[in-house]
Length: 159
Image 1 (cartoon, rainbow, N blue to C red):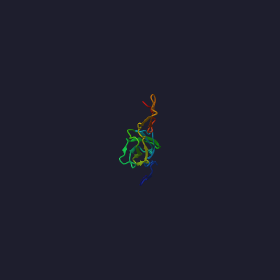
Image 2: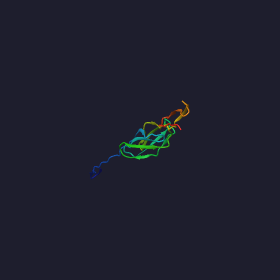
Image 3: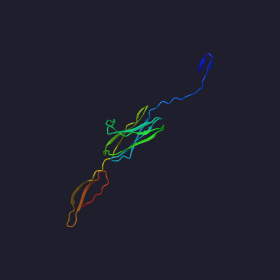
Image 4: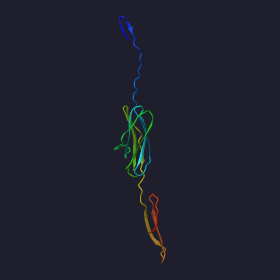
């Protein structure tokens, strides 16, 4: 609007929309899958909430994730839940691992719940005990022994 001694003139009415305030991402840790003696896949869900987001996992043998190893960040965009996973290798057999997904963007960082899994125990060779022969005769004897398969399918025989 402009005014002078000759009068007042008004300009056109225009409008504008402000940018929405960026929202921190959501992050949810989900159960590990494909757990073996030395490998596992950790999983989670991330929602970037409309802002470019980086997500990664923290993994440790400590329940508080102290000394955690962090994975290489993965990039996410959009406004819906998206699955994120990480294949772990070189794990120690029969060991409990703790993990969580972490998502971060310009509006903040969100950490999922800490979950855990335990790798399977390594296979152990069967243990055997040879017992004394019984019913020993001129042409025959009974041989016997004990076998503990130690949790793995085993075959036993005498040689």
